[in-house]
Length: 251
Image (cartoon, rainbow, N blue to C red; front, top):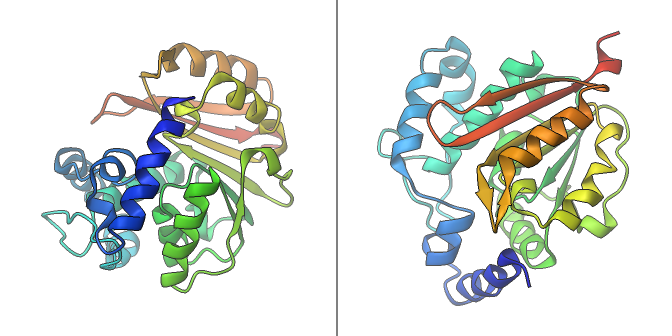
């Protein structure tokens, strides 16, 4: 049994026994809803230098009370996780040259969608294309319930084994998800990447005995013949991002 499979049992138990405050429960807050103020403060400070953030992103940065999310002390209407997710959207905008909801992307595949917060944000910012969350069945149920509370009902939910080949202009997002998969699951995804127009990964140094720096350096080498890649160290945390744009889009 993998580490995530073990944690799933606790996540489901916490969600079922504390439906009104599930985001503050020990395992859930450690895995999919961290309440860390420090990184959020850095992200917020960095983004505040950008006029696009001030005019477009900041006005819609908010969480509802569903699940009792932690509150960011500089902007109590949103959580520290929402600040981090908006930062990831800002990094994608910088590296891909377009803001995802306003771009030509018509299909997003979100690998390991947490409890649905990134999906909610992207829709809040105006995305109207196809959105698929790929996750464990236990997490898919939580995500569906959470998103439907926001009126977001057109999301597709899939396990890794049932993941479909993308169509149209597609983006795969994997923030702290692929880096927490066992190698056999990563291998399944490796056979899919060339079908996407854009890939965006965020990963940490190690998980469950796997050296992620070594793994993603190898993945970069495998992808660089087909993708233009920007591989960057996060200036505020011990993690990295890797943004890949299919070279067929550069012709």
